[in-house]
Image 1 (tube, rainbow, N blue to C red):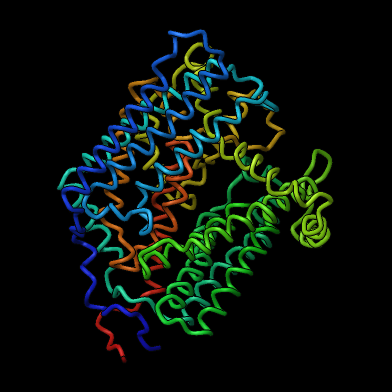
Image 2: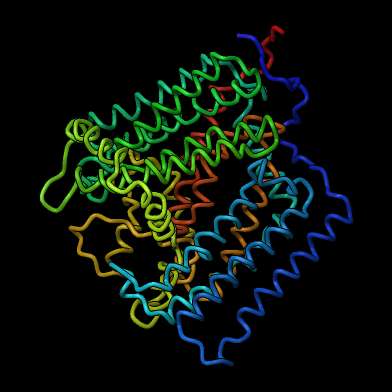
Length: 518
């Protein structure tokens, strides 16, 4: 294969050296600092009347939710003033995107509490929601300080050296379309093997197996399944660097197949990760956001993906029966037809938008945690976090009795009182999980550490300078930014994510020392 990258292979820095980045002009950086202070002052002003005026709980929640969103925007201005991060949104730095998502999921989405709660959320008191928003505001400040301070220099060198070892033998040049097909084939075979052996395909299948037993090979298959998304990223990178028709057709075909497979599996995240696998290479090559692709993807997500998912899941699983993967695939076309031709087309987008805000509303977990901890449920020991790396590094084949990580399922039972026969997983969130491990102090310390870790990641992985960083971003950006998992589960997920990204980079990039033809 020929090297089709527009950037000379040797122009990329070594992965063991932290990229210095380009600092913004002093006036621009000072302007961002002034903007940050102004936004922070507005956020504080929104919270100032609390306790001074006879506000209702809904009004307190509205003011606090807007304050959290504005505080995130203030933090974003400070983060973007750092060297190498000022264009971090277009170049997919985790730090800026974490703040944007926090503003939406904890700020804007919390405004849905202005309507009466439904379902399990009715257990949550309104004053608990207001308290949780205050905790989120404090955690945003702690996270921002941690990101600005960053990790120590020895830790940066250690992490950069570890990445260099993982990528040893590869060049920062991506192979062509052939590698995209190979990677997607490997990932598809891993998914097929899981469906055949376990009788489960994503949401489809018996959910009891997820919390009652785990096979020694399950983690290996899950790691290999990530190769499918890497194949899309390679196809996207090749399409954006060469502009060839066959590259674009390959990209369109792989994305279409992945979206269909994700829909049949009953998951929405597959669509989002597929979009990231296109947007991240676009940012790496073009160094800007593809607004057109982002808008089209959002509309498709709201018009097709969410309504289909909402109609499909009750069909494949209910209280009486659960369809097999083969039966679910057979039922999918009929569900899709109902979605494509709705009874009231004008109501589709507003309904999906409202449902999406409810789905991504993360303040509930923080609120129920603060409401019940420690008055009803005692604090958990922070020492649990120290055990997580050990659990993560020991394979199940070596440790047959290794605990099954289903903390969201157990959180639903512990805090919402769901019976064990209801297989649903609530989002503990890092914020809520830190709070239930010791209260405010543990929350602030943990968020400071998380901010420093995000800064460490952003200082090492810069896809516009080294395309091998794309594979690490695809694995870690949803894990960190989505903010649904508890801290323990996040720590346990790190080794497998690192291995998957390193293997993807090894397969997708050219070996070092091999002569390249122009």
